[in-house]
Every structure is written in structure tokens, then in C-alpha cells.
Image (tube, rainbow, N blue to C red; front, side, top):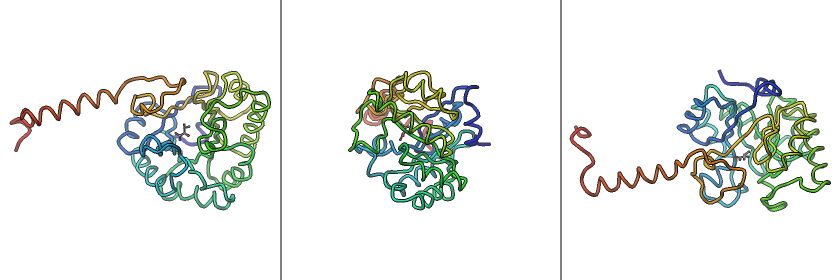
Length: 262
Ligand code: KIV
């Protein structure tokens, strides 16, 4: 059985939470068999899968499609669908309608919403209607036009705002909170102040859990290698070696062999 938002929330203080992205069936199957608690169908797919420069233009239909593919594979982890830019900004009613589609049509277990205090009413409405919400503050990629891609919360006033954001999101009923690209000490303070788990990416070691974009940790997205990435393997290079070998073997006539033929 899949984990629930409640079981993830209960891990705070007991066990570190692990989370990874996945966007398709075959990858989700592998991630789900790797003792990962939460799988995020992130709108980062705009960059990693579609080659775009930001996440802004990804649509509800694209996110629904990828969430369905992931859901078809997952039996253990919690599946969280990322709500794309402009799918929850207009009104809480719009957010309920779109979030509901992720649960109804794509079998997601929860949705993720970027933004702090400004999202309180929306998160409240969703959680009151039994749609579990994962919050996301700090460097929120959907705000790229407003804040760029840089570490947030370095200045005192920014840090204070992020603390208020975290407390507001907790109060609105989110089951956990992603902290992206903020100083480790600030992430530690937020983690101590809120009762819900914090899941960090570029936010140091004191968060209750960690999330990575799998393309980054496997060398599949060489366009960008931020400081917080640990590359666990270079699958991109391994794929290139295998593809090149296949191509040479076909060209020189050594593949297929007798055993591959009918
Ligand atoms: O879209 C995404 O993959 C994300 C993670 C970086 C948290 O939002």
C-alpha cells in the first residue's frame, strides 16, 4: 500500500524522509523500489524532460499526463503532483478544481503548491476538502521572473518572512514543506519551529528530509549543476557508451547475432 500524507507527517523526529522526482512509468517503478518515501511529479519536467528554460509554460494537461504515468507504477511511496504555474493562482476554487483532477484523474495522493503566506487561503481550502498539500518556499522556480534562480533568505528581513511563511503554511494544514535553496541555519530554525516535516533541497542537513531531481543526481541534465547536487552516478555517460556501442555493432554487422534472430 502507498504511504499517506499522514504517515509522511508522522515521520518527523523519528526517521529522515527521502524524496525524488519521477515523470514516467519505468523510472517511477525503479524509484518506488528504492526505499524512497515520496515521489514528486515535479514541474521541473519542463526543464529536464522538455528542455525548456523555466517551469512557467508547463500545462495542467502535461502534468496530468506525467502524473498518470508515475501513478501506474507506484505502490509504496506517496505520489505528489506539482501544481503548475497559474493552475492555483486565480482563486481557491480554481485550485480545488485543478488539484481535484490530480487525485481523480491521475491517482495522485497529494499536490504541491509553491508560495508562502499568499497561499494560506488556498491551502486551507484544499486541506479542508481532504486534498493533502505539500508546501514549497524559498527558491520557488515558478517565481523566476520575480526573484531569479538564487539562494533566498540570506538577508534578515527575507529570513523573517520565510519563517512567517513556514508557520502560515503549517497552520493552513500542509502535511510537509519543501525548503529550496535557503541557508542551512535558517532551514534548521524553520525545522525546529514547525511541527510538520521540512524537506530540503539545497537547504542543508538539518531538514527532516531531502529531495533531489533524479536527473541531477544521475548526470542526466548536464545543462545545470548547482552546488547542492551530489552526483551519485553518471548514468548519462553510461547511456552514451551503450548507445554508441549499439550503433557501432549495427554498422559493423556484429548485432544482431544468430541468438537474437528467429
Ligand atoms: O519541480 C520540482 O522538481 C520541484 C523540486 C525541485 C522540489 O519542485
